[in-house]
Length: 104
Image 1 (tube, rainbow, N blue to C red):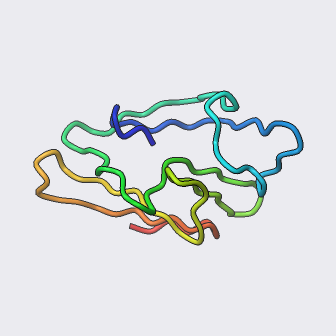
Image 2 (tube, rainbow, N blue to C red):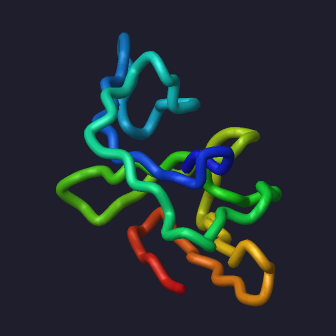
Image 3 (cartoon, rainbow, N blue to C red):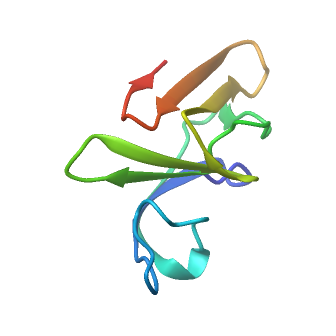
């Protein structure tokens, strides 16, 4: 999630050393390859970051398992992505769990 640019990216993460999906402490920019970047629809913004807000999401195949990171590190058992309209007349919260559930 790139709040400043109002975009999100899909990326492939390359763990380094002896890291596994369970032991990655943070998502380092140097260790990922961006596959696709999408900008939010005009008039929709990511809400300002708050505690529990998700910055990075790692989907771990083949299980529907997710690792979540925020500004302070790993988030568990759930985190949120908050969207607002630019005039703040509407908002929506997307909740993600480490078990793979996404709800809004």
